[in-house]
Image (cartoon, rainbow, N blue to C red; front, top):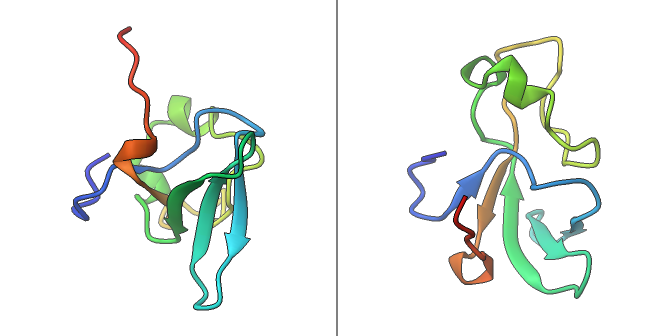
Length: 93
């Protein structure tokens, strides 16, 4: 989604058990690759509101994604995964 940050941003990961989380000294949460430990970017609690995402997409959020919202409150925000573009691999569908 377009977060306005200039970085590739996502409100969910691609699938379960793909990313790790490391809390940094300044409070930010680093996102790392679970396979190699490489730095992917950071995750913040200011993603889109749950009401802005379709129910079909909400049910596909992996269970191990960072929890930043209350599932019963559509006004709470999902995470914003701010990912380094160099760590992304795009595939044609």
